[in-house]
Length: 610
Image 1 (cartoon, helix red, strand yellow):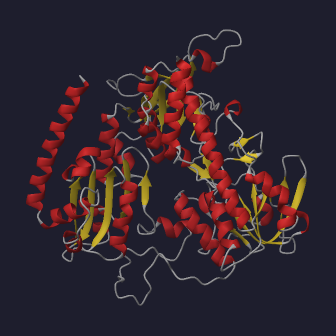
Image 2 (cartoon, one colour; image 1 turned 90 degrees about the vertical axis):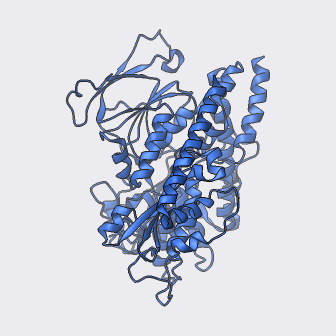
Image 3 (cartoon, rainbow, N blue to C red; image 1 turned 135 degrees about the horizontal axis):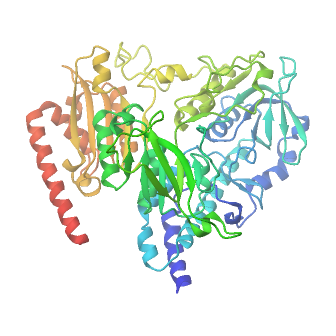
């Protein structure tokens, strides 16, 4: 009977997951070879005939790291208008990435760091674990079927990246790249240690470092990659946890808390801040968006332990001889203490947590430790981030080494990293390109105060200091996103500003699918120019881009109030928020009526559940 149920579930899950291509790192027993030989195998077999051997080739550019930044930079450099010869060097085994050992295929190729969590988030929204378990399937059967599909899809994504790279005549070399001790202007080269133990010398006119980031690991946590994880090793999770404790209050922690809760786990979120909303505001969220997200977290049944940190880990019970931790599923105990140490206040509640698994999601740091940067004269900051100038050029004594993406530090986003990689390519090859992010200086629609202008610099300092450089998306469930200024930031700049709110429940689509969300517009008085957009709810990470274009295009509240949007779409909220800015009293009444409608709907849903 279970085999029949499993066949049905397998077909259902495949249909649900077929559009998702993401990186997952299961244990080796779960990895499966693709039905056909990998493109990497065919590419490497034919490489000598197609472009030339690595031993005899002088490259225009060598890129270290084949994540999303490295791959996109390689494609940009090899194609018009540059047309450079490029070698892409990657070390998936040394960096702990997903490998298919039967084919030698790097299944993480070209994928951003958070691709797994985002795809798993969508999967958790589309399937009902409780329903599948109710059909009689075992937990391991449900989890393994999800993972097997993920490996297949990761392989498909990796092979597509390889296809694009081969089509662009980009060479691929698998191995650990380091700067040689004798690196100089006369020897602009890299040592690449391959999996077979041999070392190959790669010469290049320019070098781009795109090795990404790694999780910050606090001392005292016994990470084992089986039950106790960081934000990378969580991808090796090989079972469906019944309970999970997470330390962190940032984007990754919130994402995984909601994912695992949607998959049926009991989730406890441990944060150092005593006010959860304040913790989210520290990563840039507007106060009302932060409050909405916290309310949803609590409403979903996630327990938040405030002002606390983990003091100790204790394995519970005794294992039988030869028995694995995952076999008996004995929970372990976390003991909490106050932030910074010491006892928690009386009346705090339970200071002990029993859980199947634990995740520390407390930030990321640049991945530079094994590159031998000092040999090339490349300086780093206190966190290991490579120091670069406004053109993404490092301090290398040769003057021809650049860096982009997480390896140079914040904001640790795939979008900004990709933009940095392409900007570095333009800089190193002196290609003058039009500014696609900013208004030209002679454009009359551009402002003189910098509102809505991304700026020309892609270095971390320029990106971090400009709220108009890029949009931010939090892939929780519901999503949150923002671009531009909050009301408080506008006032700090001396701008006379106001804000207007539209509830998701005020539009039909929102009332049905995301009734607790909101969209906020921040605008300049009296002209009504929009200077900030903040959203929490379904499709927030998509909706934010229309708001971004409104700000960059100097659109006003009046423009949105008179715009016609397609019916039964979330974009109607832009019109509703604009109307709220022009009629505050009427808007309050409409929001109150929408709140009553949501409460009535929720009561009906609860009655059906009973």
